[in-house]
Length: 412
Ligand SMILES: *Cc1c(COP(=O)(O)O)cnc(C)c1O
Image (tube, rainbow, N blue to C red; front, top):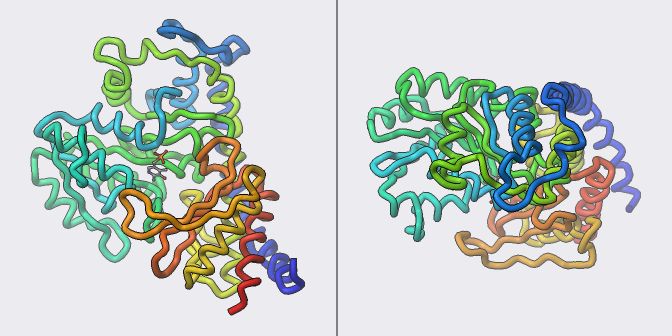
């Protein structure tokens, strides 16, 4: 580390420390919710074993569903290794909730890229559209919900589900707090009490004291190789919300009539339990890493979002790298700071569904897990690096410093 970077790093550590009390408070609060849920469900060693075959009477699986529901403060949940990814669990939930002739309305503008094929914006085979389920979206207006446009869109009676993405994902927009999501949900239900409100909660879990379902949304979904798996889960995802919604989704996950009764958990359950127990802490490590990166890169003259000392509602930190070279160096640094594949050099490449080349840095114990330190960005102005994760603050900080070092070595 150069002398300059050492001074900047010390200053950034001090600035970030102002965030740490808030992050620790939330972590303690959420840890208590999780621990209380374990205790209330009397989780024991027998619950960690898992099942084979049809997985009937899998007591560990069924108790874990209730642990999630309690900790998320909602009626019911479905936690399964059979969900292959965040995109898959979103797909299951959408197909579970919608029927031919229905329409889905996104009120947070464009959804996550991988949902384009699911919805049928890209004319995907097997899409909602192919099943006669329509889609519309209302964009943010001046960075906030466009209530007027939402109300007028809702006059279309075929709308059965309102979709909200909590995290900014890979867009340059704000991430929503659970409370904001609750407020807009109340507004939506005021206009149309008969619609379901669903939240894509990926990257959001345990960043705040309460999740969107606590504030009245009908269901939310998230991936276990992000926040809710705590870095331990090797695969899987969850759906949480009202009994009715979770049941509808369970019939889509397996089969009508079978629903949640069948699904072997194999060797996954122990990691799911331990990961969920760790999740508030792991998320806090990622938030601290993001907070440090925000302070460091702002002091180096870069635009960052969120700025230091702001409340955070997801684990994503963006840094506007200004030039393609710097974005590439940023990602090279994150890669070099990883425990796995640190010797690999990430390069920009064309990805299906993206108009610009994308560069990604990740060296994770769980393949593709973005609760572990990772960075990616499309090669287009303002050359935003999306940074997230960090299993430990210490390793996250070292990775971020590695990125800063690489950028400084470029010179101006
Ligand atoms: C990661 C993510 C998804 C998709 O999850 P995958 O596991 O990558 O399929 C969807 N929405 C948001 C907001 C995400 O962060």
